Length: 215
Length: 74
Image (cartoon, rainbow over all chains, first blue to last red):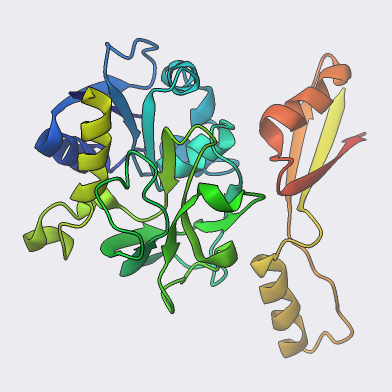
């Protein structure tokens, strides 16, 4: 099970994403200018501030050579996990419905949030129970989800009182129609070790991804 | 051609920047201000103005959340 993690100029969570990927498989570093995905079984588009978030978060990264290949990979059913800036990039690329707007409070906010698993019929959440709560850190300025998304594509919601960014219907994570692409604003790759992540709940999403990608 | 692209949040989508400015103005003594929206301005020289529409659709704006208006600048 080889999991590719793309690094763009301005990405800052690629190291933790590779660390998390390494716990469930082999992490492979991918570079934004290289269209070759090196035969990986799954791709993580990590968080950060690709291209300085210029214009709109994710707007420029989506046109990178690596993303062109990720779009093809996803359309063929390949597993793609977009975290924070990665979620923004996948929305901009049209792989996921909706868009991420500035938080209602206009502030960069960094805090541990409780998420509720709404659906387990996706590879990523197949290791969870419906209604299960995951404690995962979130840190972003533009995480307010807005979009026309079918109910069965909403996979994760902020638990009651946890929706700090003003997302529509408390939506924290959505999948595409094919259910092989997941985007979420909170950072599961930071919650893979109780010592530093506040919990190891984030590992579940990586385990689910690894389980299906090898099957 | 010198062009100007005005990009604004779509009507109906909460614009917290506009709300913040709208609240700040009366505090400075400017009364009678309503419906404030904050957007973006992109100015550019283009050889083929016919491409501006595609530029907006593809990169300059996100049509899901933003409206745009192309103007000729002088």
